[in-house]
Image (cartoon, rainbow, N blue to C red; front, side, top):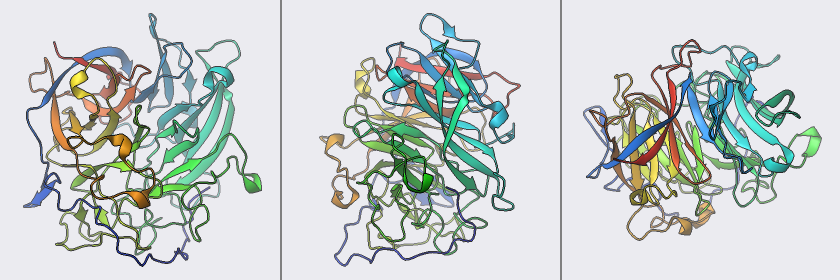
Length: 477
């Protein structure tokens, strides 16, 4: 399942003839603004205030945390350098890793890299079958496109027979591979749907910049190309084999399963680097935070079959791939090539908040009732050009809005349901400037729906350092 460097656009379904609603949020007063070459966030006040409680330390570059539904209470932490570590209740961070994939990764740049071991998802039946899945960056496969950077793997593993805290590396079964032209924009989050049991996986647009250049489809870019997986969220059935020896089946209700010219795995498209995905624990709605190009960072509620606009738009704004620092004056397209509406973000932040959005979770825990139903997220660096300045943010849906009413299918979404959320800063109690003062790398959620943030004080995945920490969001004291 590799991208094709010689690909040319193929036929797509005929454009729709009826008028489509404007779902871009381009006129929302909560959209970020642009002036004098800079982007600015519409922030509400007052900021929220939380405490941070250290749970684990001594990691290199923690990316995510998850707790399997097996009753053990263990937290599994993904470290980008190629390790999965176990935090055991009462035992702390176990010395021996759950899984060590360091010898299977592409060599990482210690100063900065977006490749590595990126995510982990436990099968819904993990307590009985011991199956789990990871997504990681391997060296470019033999026969891969010349000059391309790496091949990303979605692989299944099983646990060791004699130790539930150890996986068996020899059990690896590669489910899917995808070649990448550049080192960045790997996407990589994997998770299982709460109602359907299918595996969801997000891919970046191939990397580089502006969705153009080597390995990108001329004129439209990869994210808008229906014939490939880059720039998409896919949904697959990993419990059944597919046709022609494929390691997975295609769910029969995938939105483009019968659409000419579309890869049937595609669940949603038009995304630059959807590096963070989460399902809301109460409503089951899928949310992604997707990194922008030079100005605007986005959070989308993802509906089946949706087109989220990249590289036609960057967030709510027009986009010019020949000059990404200056959004063209409108009007610009609000529909895609098939006449489908481009669905804008419900949260948009500018680079006054930092450089790269880091997605989180809709808070459904009990410890901080004031944040119930709000989306907790952050920015990697917090302040552009300033190291160790990571920032936490929170977005609240419009008054009276129930996320559970957001349509599951994109063709049923109306502008009223896709209204923008109100964004506030989150100040950290006890921090002199209110910020995390570390790079924000990812978030996690436990079975009690409490939220954790992964941080470190190095820009890259440097295995010689151990500044990485897992911090739990708790009430301010």
